[in-house]
Length: 402
Image: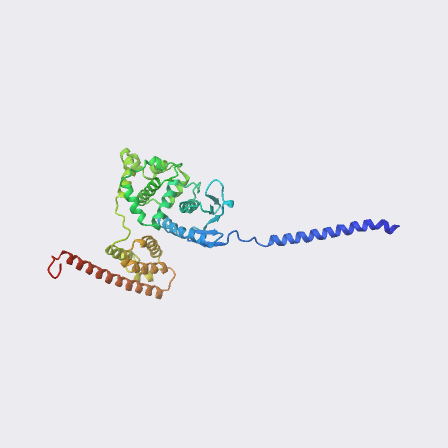
């Protein structure tokens, strides 16, 4: 009888122990699962100097990284960036179901970085992709320079850099834009600077491009730091209030203020843009880029590339070589084909200058000299052929030479 009374109690105790054991096992499995890192969100990563592109497939990430490389070079040139953009800006190419609903991309500002979720489907055009990349990079520069609202980059500047990348991908576009500008009056300044203007049509996008080129030229002429300008622009998006502070003398004069943009527009659009330099211009460019002036002992002296190798420890030398390389990267698409290999050889020397050994740099100088001599000989040969052809054309016809 006593045993029968205890049996229900023992069964209950055993049940509780079994339940606790099972619960403990479940919790240990959950803990183990939590300890395992989640699978990567994206299957493919491509990188440029300032961007990390994450995508579900390698082709897409590589495709966007190609655009990013062109943008990197342009922004590096205009804003003199060195190694300040770390970590890289993250761009995630996401399918429609994971993408923001109200816009083609979503830009997020983090404490020390910028990220973008870009909808990636058949409706995502190259222009949308470039706009997302440009917005992110300019916002990151604003963030580094302590702008109050880093993401608040004005539409005209984003559009201008989209057009700059398009021109770098296809230099022939400059000729088309220049030709159209000859018959197109400039948009009023108030229209371009309107923060609600989106520049969705080609004509207004070209105007944003010309406006930034004009403004950039004046900023350089006044020795105004472009990074500071960008940060102030993001903090003070009403550029009509910023420009008077930048150019007080121009804005103080009513007539000068009225002519500032129209005059700059005409000057820019009537310059002679060529797809490539002439052989003579390419030769002179390389000669100028290969001549350095430094004052290591307090007196200005002229140095050749070979002669600056022992001066690598000087900050002024390193900075100037870095600047020459930046300019060469931007200008090399315009090198005359006769001189392209010589330009490229010199570019390798500049690129290797900070890290290569003195012996390796000396060899690179010799390679540049060899390629320069080949280009000189080819230029002379072509000039002789053209001269002979021209003389034949002017020679009067004869019976044997009709």
